[in-house]
Amino acid sequence: MLFLRDAIENQYVYLEYSLRDQVFGSVHPWGSVDPVASEEFGEWHPLGRATTPLVSCLQHAVAPRVITDVVDDPGASTVVAKCGKLDEPVPAPCQLSAVQRQQIQTSLALPGRYPSASTSFEVACRASTWEVFAERVGTEDFSMLYLHDADGNQYTFLDYGLGDDDWGSVHPRGAVPLVASIDAEAWHRRGGASKALVRCLEEAADPHSRHDAFKRWAQTQYVVMV
Image (cartoon, rainbow, N blue to C red; front, top):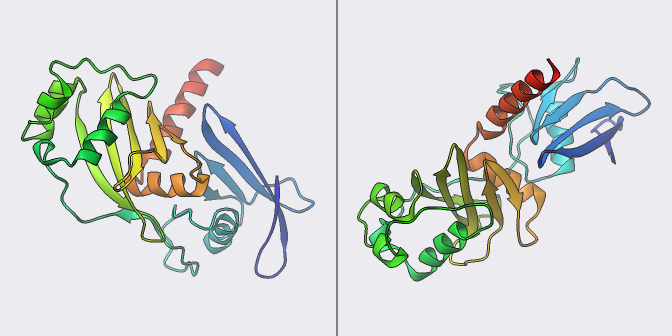
């Protein structure tokens, strides 16, 4: 629980909790039950008569580097620094640096993922395309992207399919230790990375991921309740 205030000194209560490794919560005016915002998989939504600028302001107060846009609103005046994708081509598997190879090996060896490799990792890295690389390391697909945070720090994002889910990891560019793992589409902090940073990078990697995940979760709840 946190206590927040807006620009004209109205006060609010912020509640946050986890369900199935995902972040949910709500914001309520001090002394009132009715929420002004809901948080679903880390994505904030205005409720009642709350305005987009107000909810953006409260979200920014909770986690200044969160970059999720509440809704598209030309009248919104709050500007939040964003994470994003770097417009830079990634190397082919046969062009990977030693650090990038270590990042991939570390990612594939994380708990819960069991790729069925058809060759050694060294042979897989001789592939000229990521499609062939995926076949050799035993994943359904494989991709690499470069991301940046609000301070300009750069990261390597690895994404691959196993079963029906997406798995992967995020590493500081030029380093092997993780800042986040992606486990069956759920993002988790690693190595002391802040919640705000991981949310920011997730939104940069896939702006629709949280919304789609929430819809899947809601459908599951409906089936269970019926």
